[in-house]
Image (tube, rainbow, N blue to C red):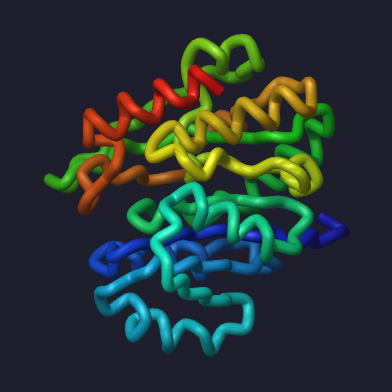
Amino acid sequence: MKKWPLVSIIMPTHNRSVFLLEAVDSVLNQSYTNWELIIIADACTDNTNELIKPYLQDNRISFKETEENLGGAGARNLGLDIAIGEYISFLDDDDVWHQNKIEIQLDFFKHNSQTVLVYCNFNQWFQSGVKKEVIIKPTTSLNEMLILNYIGSFSFVMVVSKELRNTRIDSELRSAQDWDLWTKVLRNSNTLAQNCNLNLVDYRMQGQKKISVNKDSVSNGYERWYIN
C-alpha cells in the first residue's frame, strides 16, 4: 500500500490482567505497524496498571485510567473520543488477533471502497485450549442486523473512522453493545457490511466475568436494544 493510514485500536479493560497482555502482544505482533493502541483501564483494582507500564515505552500505546466504572460501552466511547486514526478497530481484552489482521482488513477496504465496515471469521477459543473455526456470512445488511447480530464481536471489526464521528454506543447497555454500534453504522452509511472471509481472531469463550455468559445481563441488554 502506498499510503499508510493510521489505525486506532480501542481496548477497554476491567480487572482482566490475567488475559490482557496476550491481547496487547497480539497488537504488537501485527504485520502492519502504523497503529495507535488506546487502552482504557475502566476503574481497575487489580495489577493492570503495573503490567502495562513497560508497554508504554512504545509511543504507539496510550493508557487512560478512569476513576468511575464506565462499563464497556462508556470505555469504548471514551476511546472513540480520543482516537485519531482513519480507521477504527476494537479489541476485547481477552481476545487475540492473528498477526495479519490489520493488514488484511485494510487491504480489503482498498479493494472494496463501497463498504465502511469489514469483519472476519474467527476461532472460538475454549478454556481447554480447543479452537473451533466459525464462518460468518459474507455480507450483512441493516435489515439483517435488525433481526440478529450477524457481524459479531468488537474484536472482529474494522470501521472507517468518519462513520463513527457522531456515533456512539448506548452507554446504558450492559450487553449487545457491538450490535448497537454496527446497526447504527449501517443505518447511517446505507451500506452493506462485508466479511473479508479469513479467520483473523481467537475469541475467548470462557473469560473471567465475561458478560455474554450472564443470562440476566444479556436479556436486559437485548431488551434495551430492541426498545431503542
